[in-house]
Image (tube, rainbow, N blue to C red; front, top):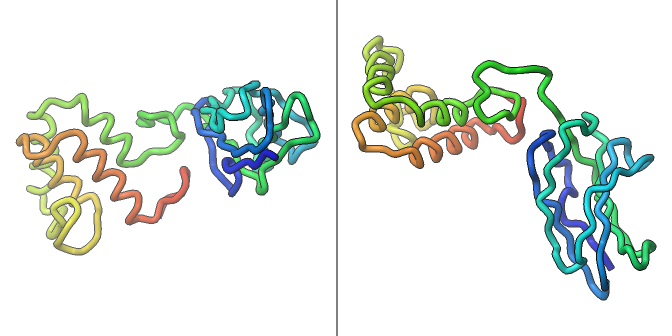
Amino acid sequence: QIQITAPNAGEYWLRNWDYPITWTSENVSGNVRIEFSTNNGLNWRHIIDLPAEAAVYNWLIPPDANISQQCLVRISSIDSPEVSDISDNMFEIYGCAGVISGDQNGDCFIDLTDLSILGSGWTADAVYDIAANWLQWDLCPWYDDAPAGGDCFVDFCDWAVLLDDFAAGRADMQDVLNFADEWLRQNMITEPGWRP
């Protein structure tokens, strides 16, 4: 018996990025074959053959994979092809429409993660100038000190405070990344491409 555990529930995966394909198996000897389809199972494309007990494979989605909302993964025993499983639900493979200026991590949209990556290369003086000017021009009459207190919401005003702390050595790059994650979570951004 083989059971796919991911992708299995409407995942949203980007071409040329890697994601874990996971499965469980019982009484399956030898290798399994992993394949994917972008047309709801009409055609299948080989990914890799692995020992059944591996249970996970970090799949780098080919850059030439078709963009589709009808994607499936199939895992089958090579010795006994009738022993197989297919994703319970289709998932999506997407790609950038073109080069997006400012997209630092290549996920096809711009968010605080990109700003965090860009910020890792800034000098302290440059970061301080940005934060100080942001706050000086009274764009942020209240803020949450990234991310607790104040207006009870994590927003760009909190980002300005964090930049100020970063420049002064009171915050490090992990604080910046944690803030970016929290900002995305509080704004309920659950999939790439969606914006409040």
